[in-house]
Length: 372
Image 1: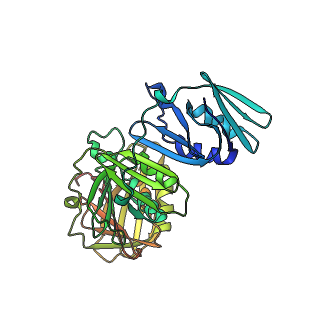
Image 2: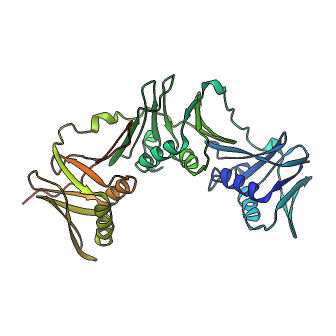
Image 3: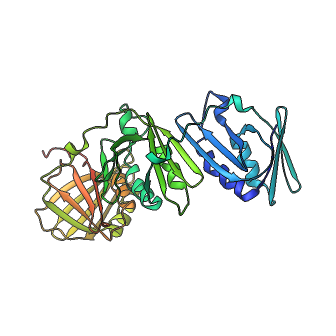
């Protein structure tokens, strides 16, 4: 038995926070539920897929202490569509009543015992503090390069974090591209190396708060705490590949180009590019880049862009989608391409970087056919 009254908007925000942790499909019915549990004069909401768990606290007027697990997606749909100030929720047996203004619903419910145990937060004195917005930006600038879930090497399906007394470094790669961001403003008293789930990090990005984020690790678990919300994530097993070895050291050619101009042109080229390879040819000439895309079925496209380039002419091809992803996550007016030849990985960086930040991306070119 549990009974409480909670502000409609507050409850909706809380449910939106935790619902993203619900698994899209599951063979365990309990994982499709959201746990609602009284916690003193607050209501604790929780959702989990066993690898990622999100817990948040919202203020509520508690009449009867207790807990109930309700169908998560259905509960969220109901609360989203209600129009009223206060929502009353009470259970009786295996049914839960939800009422707000002139609307009332009844949902099947499960007991607290049927719901998985929630992770422990660990000791607060072991937590490392970061400014939330800076961490969110760092995640956005790297997470796009994480490999998809179908990747055989599990370590590539996560974002690698390396925290030590000198810096925090984030690295992601899928074998075709790499993003590495190092921040010397953020330092930890102890060393932590972990491969983190993109799902948990994307949940962290969605949190809106003026408060800092606190990170802690316990065994195979990493947790993030922002205000009344906590995200727990099981680390992905490593080791992470030796990424430093793939970053070329002899890319002496430099192309400087306006980021917005190149980004817009590539999006146009993609309309024509081969849908299987997404190949776009870059022809680098003196202070100019010629983009070219060709598809037997769709036609041909070409665009010239003014740029700074003074090395020998070079033809190099890329998967246009990979370059677009990189440019989308940069903010500098100009970007720099450091090149060697048509077969060597290209390093792309921002011309202007924030103080204390070293951001580098790398992309492999598409192999061109040997000349006849």
